[in-house]
Image 1: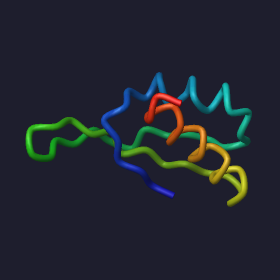
Image 2: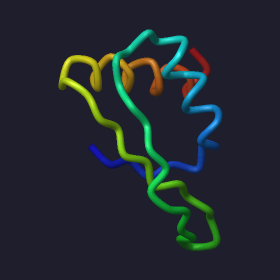
Image 3: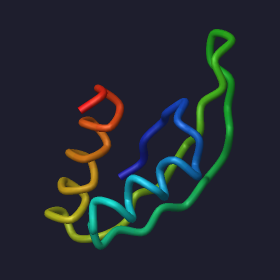
Length: 64
């Protein structure tokens, strides 16, 4: 799965570590869209582990 986010890669690694999800994160590139810098991240792992990470990622970004 590839995601594009303005969240710094280091923060994504922290979320991954805290979630305990068995996924790997790889920074593919940094792009700019409409004046916003986005990181394109490859998230690799079993589907259930990716979902676990994405759930924690959504909560972290929502302030939960």
